[in-house]
Amino acid sequence: MIVESPLELIFHDLFYRLRNFSEGHDVFLKLEGFNVSGSIKMKTAIGLIEDLEQRGIAKPRETVIVESSSGNLGIALSMVCAIKGYRFICVTDPNVNRANVRGMELYGAEVIIVKDCDTAGGYLTARFRAIDDILASEANAVWLNQYNNIANKNVHARKTAVEIAREFDKIDWMFVGAGTTGTLAGICEGLRLKFPKVNIVAVEPVGSVTFGGKPGKRHIPGIGTSERPPLADLTNPDRVIAVTEKATVDCCLSFVHDYNLLVGGSTGAVLSAIKQLSPEFRTGDTIVAISPDLGDKYLDTIYSKDWVDSVISTEEKVLSDS
Ligand SMILES: Cc1ncc(COP(=O)(O)O)c(C=O)c1O
Image 1 (cartoon, protein in one colour):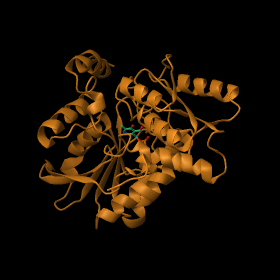
Image 2 (cartoon, protein in one colour):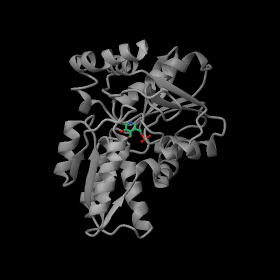
Image 3 (cartoon, protein in one colour):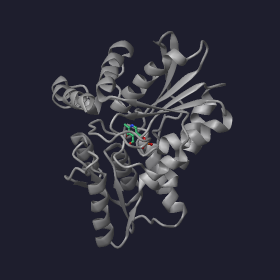
Image 4 (cartoon, helix red, strand yellow):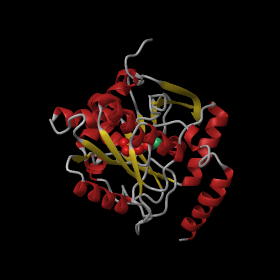
């Protein structure tokens, strides 16, 4: 295989069959962590930039791309912008992984880390304030706004959902983690075209407000919000499952032991949700789930006993006490 650009290093049809994952049921895990830049967000990044170009809004070497990201979209956009010739400014928060920041900077991005926590326990308010400041001071700046950009949904409806639909004759259950909800909204739209009866399960962490949960502090990047994203209005999941961070970490650890793959935190949450719902699965059901990234970049957090003991266990206690 010879490629002309790193942008060609994207997997469309990679599914890990998890034999006997829960109560005798196999699960097909769509692996997105092998895409270049390490996550499903490579597809989102390409979709968002191509959308701007197609609408005549962005021009290489003129436009400054601005986005808020906890890391995965940031690193994907850094790479896409470097390849296409855009200056890129990424606004993020203290939950970001250090290696992601270093990677973004190596691709030439400018990274701004906000510090102020908002009342819901997240950093969205501070991120939005930082973006407003950039848009006011940079004449050619364009904010992608992944939380409210229909191109974020469209790329997953046209690509991710189609990739899944192509692989299976029927799907009974589809599990998707929810951050911006772009993946979820795209899957809801795209997958129901072929499988109108599929049960789509949205997975979010306890403490996320997207689907009406009580706000709370969260530490696992990628899924959950402290403000409901407008894109969530375009989702219509059949079920919403909220997973504790403790259950998420436990699932990541048992998965590396039982299935020999280090997966990211949002994958752990999705796997935990599958276990919660497995009493409802019928014999012969086809169960599919998305794994947005791998676990290597979380070795010092999700996979570190010290980090888990100091951050997650305490929070679990606080959550259950309140
Ligand atoms: C690791 C990981 N999982 C899940 C998601 C959620 O995807 P979406 O923003 O499409 O809801 C993200 C988004 O950044 C992510 O980085």
